[in-house]
Amino acid sequence: MIINNVKLVLDDEVVHGSLEVHDGRILAFAESQSRLPQALDGEGGWLLPGLIELHTDNLDKFFTPRPKVDWPAHSAMSSHDAMMVASGITTVLDAVAIGDVRDGGDRLENLEKMVNAVEETQKRGLNRAEHRLHLRCELPHHTTLPLFEKLIDRESVSMVSLMDHSPGQRQYADRSKYRDYYQGKYHLTHDEMDRFEAEQMALAATWSQPNRQTIAAMCRARRIALASHDDATEAHVAESHQLGSVIAEFPTTLAAAQASRQHGMHVLMGAPNIVRGGSHSGNVAAHQLASHGLLDILSSDYYPASLLDAAFRIADAEDNAFTLPQAIRLVSQHPAQALGLDDRGVIAEGKRPGAGAPSRRTYPDRPCLAPGKEGLLMPGKLIWLVGPSGSGKDSLLAALRQREHPQLLVAHRYITRPFNAGSENHIALSEHEFFTRAEQHLFALSWHANNTYYGIGVEIDLWLHAGFDVVANGSRAHLALARERYGEVLVPICLAVSPPVLRQRLEQRGRENALEIAQRLDRAARYKPDNCLTLNNDGSLRQSVDEFFRLLRSHAAREADQLV
Image 1: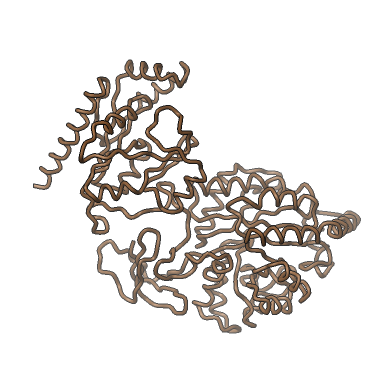
Image 2: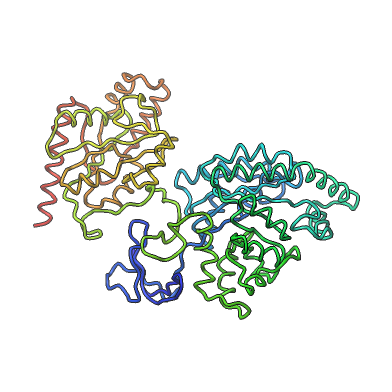
């Protein structure tokens, strides 16, 4: 993809030019326009690196849109993801609260549902942004450590923050601010608020420091980014540094921000603080830290659209020295550096333009080596074999292997299903193995169906490029994806079997009961893929193999006639 006519916000300057992206990476950028006809016109707009969000509570409002109203998890996650992408955010650390300032809160009830939704949608390639987890640990709570221990080894956990929202601590050093906030939030009388405040102080005295020490030690052992939260004094900062914190999240005073910078910590402030002009808790304003050169990272916190808005506001403000590239670093490069994500955060060759998750159609996109695409020629053909369950795809593939045709190779599928599940022509992988391969770009195509992940190895591209024809056990539902990637290289063949023969084969293999067989027969009757060559597979395997090669020869002849 090439984008022309854009203002590129680079690491240290803004240039008017073009950008080329290939295989999910920035291939090149220039202070000139591409003359290729497929180049897109950016209409003079800003082109930034994908924004990186380290702390957002935005997910909560979709899971509980109103008090005591629970929303379906995947619907909530989809809506949240859409809002993040619409705000320019391509890497998201979804903050989930562990422990709560009030036992029985919605956050505790939603915790497992939210964590599972983030991880499952990410693994299935349903998200447009890349979603990870940020564990916000409310230290003065008896449930905090047990919950943390259950979650800390999840692959998606990228950041942990240590919070203490008890009266007189950090964000609420001013006790009156504490009372105003929580009395209003929970609609408490003065007497109820007195009891609540006393309870929270007792919990803090019991749990805060033991939880702080233990959680910090577990993060250090696993090299997970640790953040302080609402440090107010130099003593707070010294303690946070000693515990291994690399991010100072929302320091509440100028002195705490200065001390955090002296200890080498990234100072993070809320973007809503910039947009609104100050802190809702009466703490130090983010623009004040910017004017002192003490601002490193911005977070959208509770309002996703604030992230981009705040960056441009900082660049426009006259009370600080930030240029636009420097301001954009607050929402891209600096948060990436804080997490050790060196593949994103800046417009540069080899970097990810936005760190969004792989799309549903494949896991990471790979270059399409089809004629007319990227100027690369793939002499071979990919035969995409489809057909209803029981139509004989695996038997045909096994027979083709035995034929040992010099021009034909049979590809295995990689499947997260046991190796002994029927006689499938596949290689069994655990989900961990599958996603490890996906992250390393080892699948040409991959998809999810019936609670199982399927992949076709990228090795088939090498075989096709070498001039071999490759036959793969494909998917009717994902035929369009294969067409999108391979274009004219793709030759879909559908196995057709009459209902009596299909019933007999399903009964003989003995995997399903009568009801399940009837359901399969009903689905097969509606199985009519578009624009496929049809191979009747009622007869013997030998007849089917002969018909298979006859179809390929006829297809090749028709293509040759079209070129004349």
